[in-house]
Length: 170
Image (cartoon, rainbow, N blue to C red; front, top):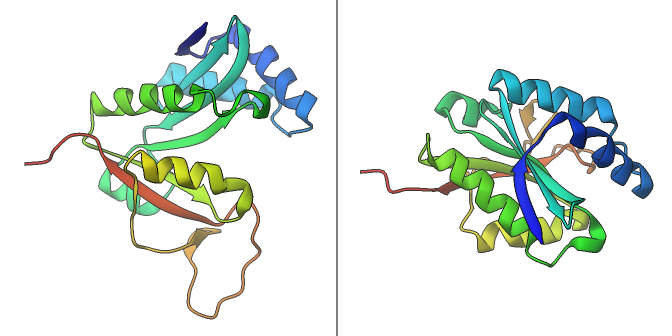
C-alpha cells in the first residue's frame, strides 16, 4: 500500500540508509535540514512509503533558488527521488501530484529544473507528459545562463527549467 505524507523526524534515518545502500551521497543531515526548513515554512517535503518501507520523496521550495522563478514568486519542485527498484510503479506520479496540489493551494504556477544528460531522461519525459513547458531561458549553471560558444561541464549542476500552470490565470 502506497502512503504519501509529510516528512517527520523518524523518517530521516531510513531515508539516509536507503540512499547509502545505493552509494548515493544523501546523508541524514540533508533530511534533518529539510525537516527544519519544512518546520520554518521554507520547504515542504512529501515522502512515499510502500508497505511502511521508504520509497521516495519530493520537495517544494517556496522561494526558488533559480533567479527567474524567485523574482516571479514561482515555487520550485526540487530534489525528487524514487528508489530505482520502485520506479515505473506510479510512486513518482503520486509524489508529483502531492507537490503540485500543495503549490496550487497558494500559487497558479510551479517550476522545476532538470538535468541535461541521460540519467535525467526519464524525469525529462515525465515532466513533459505532466504539462511542464520550458521557461525559454536556456541552460542555467553556476549562477548564470550559458552563452553561445561557452564550454561547461555537464554534471548534475547545469539544468533547464520548466513551468506548469496549475490553474488558469484570468
